[in-house]
Image 1 (tube, rainbow, N blue to C red):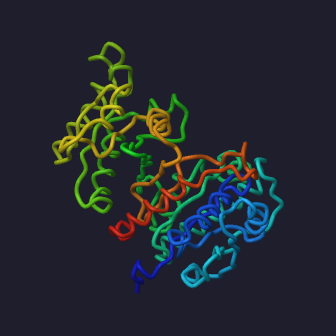
Image 2: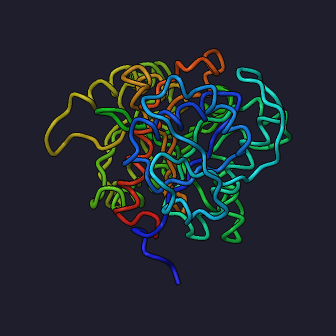
Image 3: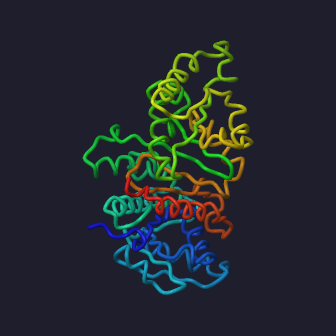
Length: 352
């Protein structure tokens, strides 16, 4: 029998241990202990303790790692303790250096966290950043969290990954963007702009939104080409591929408008007010959507995966190897991801 979500911990994966993941986790626990209460950190205990020892002089209060063997134990640890469940073997890790060992640790933590969420042992999953090259060196076939979590969830449900479509949503203050494609080359991203893929993106948003916000969403859609093709002068994808997807979505009862010129749609979405303001903007490819979100405030950005059978969020930034081990990382995006996950789980998305 599934426990009440109020009695379940959340899971937080440590990310690539050579990056800033452990640092922002400790900074969040030290500065916001009440908000981080009941969160179980999945990773490597030795690495976490070593990094905490180096970081302690820079924290607002002393904290320590406490090993736990099950996620539920995170709910009982004393004040000032960070519950860590050891899910990956020890290895030598050098801050700021890409390595297969660090990539393997990060992947093991994600696998454990996904399994815990799928077994309903945790109410939500938050992922600290991982490094795509390190994953590749470790032999991991997935380029990032989104693809890995999709595959793990599909396997758990007895499905092919293609039968569990997911989408990446990036949020900052005043803007939410959902991507049609993610970690592929720009040439492949253009090929991915099909009527079926755009429509599937709209359907995933439409299905996910009631659990997130209690109502169906209003969606705007960006075009692919400059000025959304200018009626075919700069490309026909808007006319031939994107507009038909929007028309089919409207026929199915969705509130969708577009395609709009991609150089202005994000600005207009932020400025819009009242009943016609969009809840989300669909971007045709990774950088088209991430550039405006990160420009508006990466320190508050949240990455959320729509379409999974559990709540999953992460900070909207990378591993920051250039400042790893220097006590300079900002934990605000991680805190935003934790808050977003708590909000979603309270709405019942974890039961979707």
